[in-house]
Image 1 (cartoon, rainbow, N blue to C red):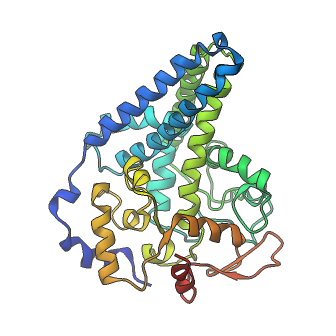
Image 2: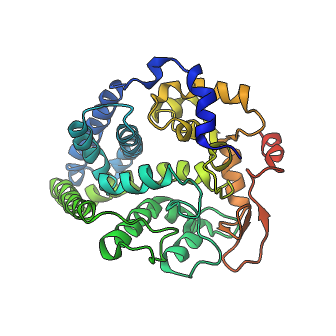
Length: 363
């Protein structure tokens, strides 16, 4: 394995200076999608006046709003990595606005994602990794086993999990930090411990987020139709879209002691429309190499990886990645072996050395 630093020594001089300059154009895209959500809620507010036979006309708007939720996460994700806007105050306020729609306090996101996941990706201390089969059978591990795509998952629970696992992920870390905040918490894959000041900030942000959502529901007059079609359905679609990316980013990869993004991360071949809409989030190995780079330059980083590290780079068609998730269990027995909750199966991680050619041949 090679550390991230070693890759940067080779690749950084080959990238133009413009790639490392903030791209504020994404703020315009975020604003458009916030307006889409606002328009959707304004129309949903009047759904109780619609004839039942016409309600299906709102469903395409629910789908578009769901995509806007995905964009809110990915736009704030880029912002908090510093690739969109440099001013800390504006970056925080805009990130809070976008992340609040996903029930995610920005300080929690920064602590879990930026500070831990990116520095210790798929390591034993990564809060976003899969559970070890030997970890205690807690409610967090039980939910992963029930909802996450795997060779054992029930399709009904998978569909429910796609719509709710983002909330479970957030709730799991909120509970760990706000109620305990120590290294012995066992219902998360790996606990994140923050300072007392950050803990208070996360609590305040959570209260503010609750008020945001209460404001949305109040605007919708707590109407069953409006809440179902204009709030629950778009959020569920958005969460499912986010979780598709999250599951395929790392869950096919081995655990690593050295933070080697070419081993512990996956990039997807996606239809170009999704790369355009989602700020090239499918270029995930590239992102882990250069978290603060303008994501418009991820395709260039991909070209460099294919030139300099063709045998190590994990580039998998999205459909193949999902198929592999559904054919493999979701607990680590060791660094390169996946197993089920009862430790009955034994499958080498699809992106581990030795089976990478199988992945490529399926593409």
